[in-house]
Length: 134
Image (tube, rainbow, N blue to C red; front, side, top):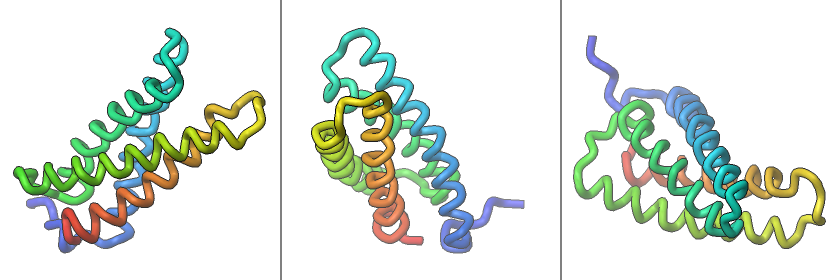
């Protein structure tokens, strides 16, 4: 039996899949971020590169599994624009959180979680309602 079309997938199914994929992408993002920090990379560059690794992972999986997108040039460009916006939001929010938080154990993780949560909400809403029009 063929996979259901994106229009037939329920919001709850898409949201569940998006969260699962986001978990995988967050592990890729956070792991990359921590490795880059451990080798002495500047914190904001490390966050930016971690974001790129995580969002690439998320796009490749979400396009097919969550939204059943066919790809194509227009969808790809739309997602790259969205990721550009969420890149600025996520790296910026991470920097804001690091500036606001006192220097405590776990400040990097706390800032990461807040920035990741905001970017995830933006990504799901825009991909579902604009890019993949589900």
